[in-house]
Image (cartoon, rainbow, N blue to C red):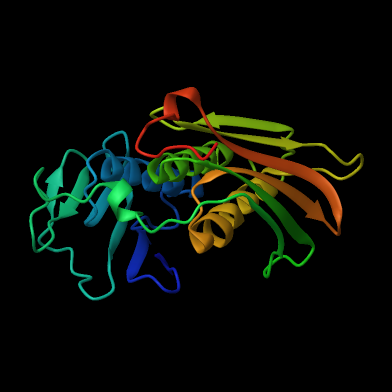
Length: 245
């Protein structure tokens, strides 16, 4: 079992692996990423934020599960199954009349052109310089395109070189472009791509509440060896968030 709680949030994620060590089909990191991606897509498509359990299966064999729940109400025993996703209803039903839209949920979001540099606490060799252009992107599109990029990168070994990665959100409102190979002799690996996505989302976008176009320069020992750009597409214009031109 692996558990993760993000500081400052009353939410915990649990990945459960019931397989014995000698089982032929083991729960892998790529399976966990796929489950997290599918679960978040299910939540955001219906704007239904609640406790959830995803069952992971290969063929007819269950290999694990993902649970997302509140630290205050961690019990998922009475959850109801919807397809292959299990959900526990909140105290107040989220019918169409009282659901909170993502635009309302992030109504206090501040957006403006800005730039800055941060260093990775866990990997001190890494630093990141970000540039916001002031063009807003719907928060749902931002979250989904980051998950899409993480799910795509997870398909490759972390030690494999990432020369280029391009993804678009499921609804087509935002895209991410990652480019490596900018410093001869210094490989930009998929592990660094994954780390850059995590830093961008947690420490820059969410921390600053700035949901918009951003350019991220990625440095190793002050040598630039990668770039990440998150852009709003034409399909995302007018999709819940107006741009700041």
